[in-house]
Image (spheres, rainbow, N blue to C red):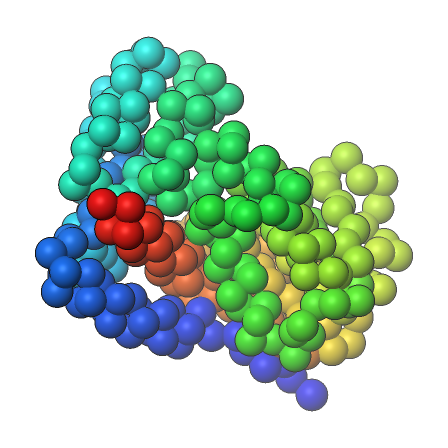
Length: 286
């Protein structure tokens, strides 16, 4: 039987409705949620993502400002800009857009992001809470989107489920693995240095793929009935492709996300949910 499609567009629409209600309540109390994105350079993929965030913010009542720095900005300049935003009472969320230009290292900058406004979970403190499974203030947007989609899959709750995370980046792979562990899944992490994806992949009930390798996983690689979450987004010949060969996997999986229309639409809303959460927290502390 063909897989059930986990529709990210439909989920994002539901989440936007929730956000509109929350931002309306904030505005009634004189609070106007605002996200500021520090954007270094002119990466086109990042620019497209940011434009999408601005549009989505407008739809749900969140102002999204883009604070641009030149491509050759120094580490000190980026840190200074982030630290200054921490003192701005009108800003509820601060995000440093990645990837950064090659001369800038996120490990030398991330601790300058205001921790209470770190809506993409990049500050070492928030990453530490995530790793320890203890009181994470803000879950990074893409991992949060993965978990929101898993909540709507046939394999939720994850307790006791066999799960495979393919990819170990600090942006997606590692956080998703930790979030699945927090839900008591049995998690195997595979990556480019793994000698083989099998037999782990074929044994998994839940598969999350985030490698940037189009078509890496096909229907013959997965177990019948598995839930497959495809985080990959690579443009090939003008077409956006995922890490999963959708057509073949669709015939085997129990549930699957499409690309586009899966994780991507939910990611934007997950980030803006964190902005609203921060605004509500800041309002309570006034």
